[in-house]
Image (cartoon, rainbow over all chains, first blue to last red; front, side, top):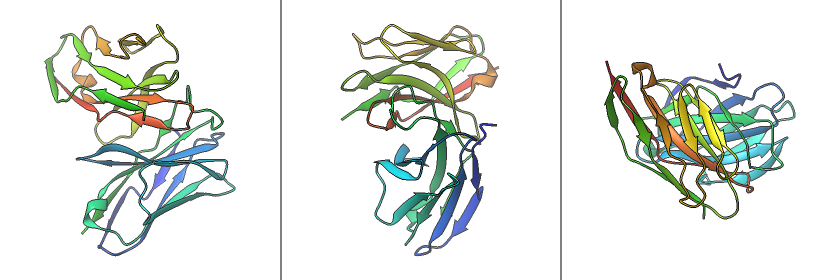
Length: 116
Length: 111
């Protein structure tokens, strides 16, 4: 158990809908990262928050947004869903945020999103 | 930009065989290098890491050495077990707050 929790575990929805994925980092970790894992594109970095502020952006679509709240939990919002958004979405947390080096990340179990 | 390339899988080995999974990277500066493992139905977990050239990371019988001259961080294990069957990800972390993962290599170990 990494100490990172994600809800829900599974999510099935229809095209055009909007969903919210939730992540609670390990106690004491200030950084939260979101990743998308699909069969054809591997593990893609989406976005990184540190102590409530956005720190880095990866291949995140404009239809997707995220935020980190004062209690450090984070939510990833996916809207206007398309079939291609079906994937595993992982959240990870780490202590650091002021430097990316030596930055071990602890991953949650993931949310499996299926868009029908 | 920075990138990580690892050998394509799947890799299929018999129990007690020697394992090598190749990983090379492209990066400016001096990144830290990691191997993560993902067991079926689970999230990734850190297997080992190295933060500077010539460092050797090791854990659970796995080893990898940070080779700056060849920009490589190959994962090795002398004798694999069925329980090592998983997907292995090579990754680098730079000063730009990003961790970049390779595509992953699936390992199957047969009894």
